[in-house]
Length: 482
Image (tube, rainbow, N blue to C red; front, side, top):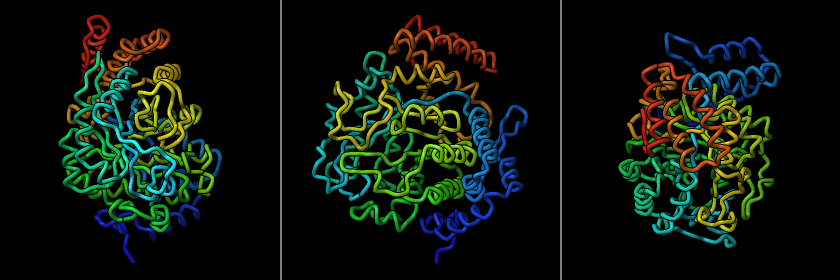
């Protein structure tokens, strides 16, 4: 029997089934222990030390107690605390991105994904570099600056060389005032050597969803293909770190397995990265299984309702306060709106989950990976967020200034978000408003920027931001950053 060890580089030791089951049992026994719950909430509260805001975070066991708690007033307290932590560390900025699907060729047999090798209904497609250029121009013409590359696992159709060529193509395209300034990559688990190549290509975050941490379920859900190897997949982030990528993104596909098990496993994975490499995940994503070509989510009997989903988001934010959290257009406008207040710091906008979907006038469905619930345009999403009091941010400054991994975490912990990320968000929003926004969005956005400039604590930074924003609007200057 493997023994739990967060510093171990063996999957069965840092994601330990016995430890997860003991955690869930402990959480169940203490879900009504008000004294313990209060002490856990107190530990997690933001503390002001000079100009710095510090959050202790929680262990997977402590966070699991909160998730198990069903006392209404305590659950409400969790939501308020999650919002307090979010505002203290991230402010009211929300980072914007879009996925770009390069290829849906895949050799795996994942039973929840329409790209699985046995699906003969779906149209298989792989973008050429010329087609990628057209997709990128379409995304730039919306106003996007940050992409997440997606591709199925297929060593013949989608080798690492194809991914590297695609990244090079994306970064090379400058159309009007458009530019993709950060490319995150979501591809299958690979070797240290290949991760090193991705790092050298200038990727932002390497993202890989575990899908499920429950090994028995994982093996059943991935019956064929290289992804069937649970250990190799689960240890991928360690190899990415060894390859020099210090911004990695975790996630599970909620609905495949019991959510409390996944929640504990997800936090254990974050604790492992911190213990083994000194820095936790840059982001955690929270996708739920959705309908797709030949996938019916109702056959998976572990689906979670919207209330449970919100509780999971809040508990993750409380447990790992310095980690970014992502929600996609899988979710509806209403679900996303609630999530923005209790922990989410990044959202996608105007996403198309089909290969080559952005150059099509009508949303294509024949190569979609999943149904998109929020089908609004990027301008509509930006307008909506401004109306809610959020700053839609197209900033990529930290990645391009080398503030990744523990350097970004230090920025976050030191309370410099308002003097660094806040003005960067306002400047990149100004770019969007000047180049791509409708008149209504532009009017609302400029009013928001005027108000938000006053919140920058450092007077010198504020004056520089004001000057740069004026240059963006009057002289067509672009790409200022702190």
